[in-house]
Length: 133
Ligand code: TYD
Image 1 (cartoon, rainbow, N blue to C red):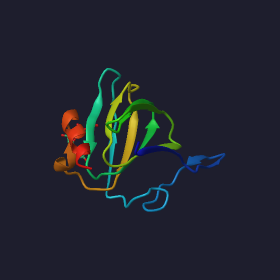
Image 2 (tube, helix red, strand yellow):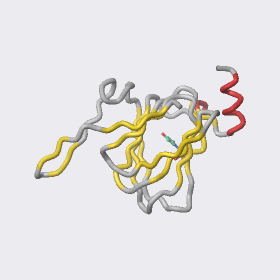
Image 3 (cartoon, rainbow, N blue to C red):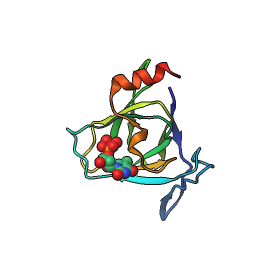
């Protein structure tokens, strides 16, 4: 499984808390893109794709959702529900997101600019792509 949950270093004092993410340091790639998801609703699923080369770090800044992670051999479920834990997803991983809390805010750091050609949106094509690895 090419994913891991990362406990982030928190700088906290009586004023509140702060987490810093730096490309090629705490984030294991050069950050090329940041996007975020908000205004989510519980009965809607997202994702359902894999990336050929893209790596991502995902943090639930607020609220919660469940990731289903699939490497073509097995599936695992991971909850993201706190801003001091990041989910790293490497290449060739099918992901689905579901069970969003209302107004969950997901921040995503990505290793590449957006490129629809880099997506695999069909699960059978994802499995076929793994045969050639
Ligand atoms: P989509 O891939 O459906 O989101 P999710 O992975 O959460 O299911 O993306 C929604 C729309 O946003 C789709 O039209 C593509 C567009 N988009 C961009 O233009 N740039 C981006 O960086 C991303 C992630 C999506």
